[in-house]
Amino acid sequence: MNAAVKVIPEAVLKKAMKENGYNSLQINEFLQDTQEIMEEQHDYMISHLNNIWGEWDGWWSQSHDILEDENITGEELEKIKAAYDDMGIEVSKAKNVEVKLTVSRSDNTVMSTTINIRVIKVGFSWYIDIMNMQDILQE
Image (cartoon, rainbow, N blue to C red; front, side):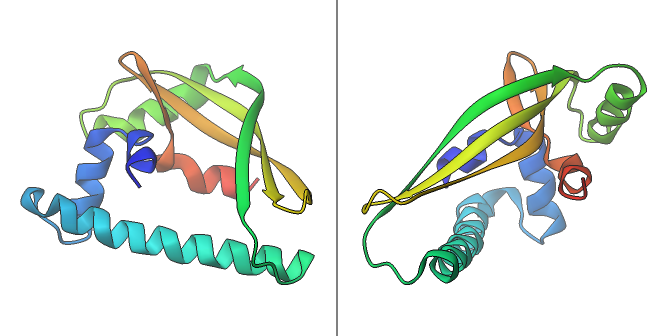
């Protein structure tokens, strides 16, 4: 769970907490609840893979490779910046990134897919652009 939090700007995390009824002292509770949701999503993914590959009791592993990235500029960049302005987050750059996700089983069965995600640069760090994730999912 901590790795997932690291790819989200702190101000976005605080806003999500507030919108879901948590105060700043309840961060551990919020992260625990969020982890439970992520575990449900993980279980759903494993169930989906079992439907494709058949039931599997062995181990799974996953990896990712960045295949390509493209700078976002102009009006599209301004739209992304505006989405974060209300939270006091200053986005300096944004990119569309093509990522190859690979899931492997212990019997050497491998499945890969490619997704496009948007990332933003805040300060010296890059984060997943969760404010506009729906735009990516609809492509």
